[in-house]
Image 1 (cartoon, rainbow, N blue to C red):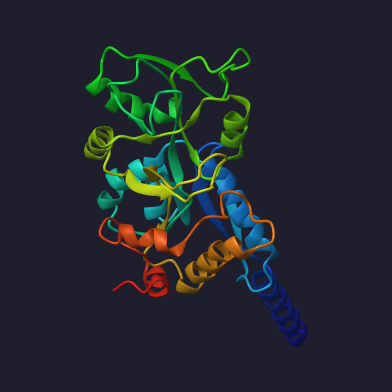
Image 2 (cartoon, helix red, strand yellow):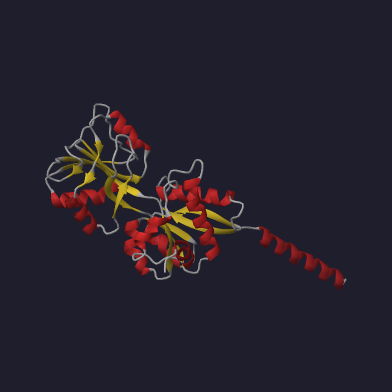
Length: 298
């Protein structure tokens, strides 16, 4: 009887071990709320991960968390594995979480300025009215510091501007991924408006107040009627984990992300992510060892 009991126990332990081996470990990625760029990006990353034949047996689970501080704290406390945070939060809070490491900066968020003002540049002197999306509050704050008399109207995803009677304000400003198809629609539908570059005075004020903004250029012909490269400002969300997160998982994640710009039909948030984006942030962020190896950072 004792031999039978031992055999049953052995088979039971074997079956439990098989379940553990066959089951997938879950790694949670915290993002901002649903319908935001970070949530959409994480969903697509999870899909790519699950369909990749060479991905480790780990399931990526996306979970929204409104507070970027809470996201970083949960990663550091080992309650979750990864988080995506905006550039402003990364600049402000990452240095307070010494156990966290950056895997990569992600897609480019461009400060779009479209207008009917004369010349190729947006300047305080030539502008009296602005229509600004709520996601570009930083732009309006910098502008008000220079020209408090300017009339600023606001819009958001629930109250989109109605241009059926024409382009109402002199300047429209918002922040969004580049390229963005809606920009081509506006350029096509409303003759007289064009993409503008902030003038040097405005750029200096914006960068002084918001150090997470970086000077960038949109290549020529990114948009309709844009025959030359366009100087402007952008910021990049950041993918963060702990410093002890396995190297093989970080490497696989980076390989998936950076393979998408060569894919046949990449997701819009993936199609223009470049490894070279990270070069500008070597002194700002501490990178995960596997990321440093891939980017050839010292």
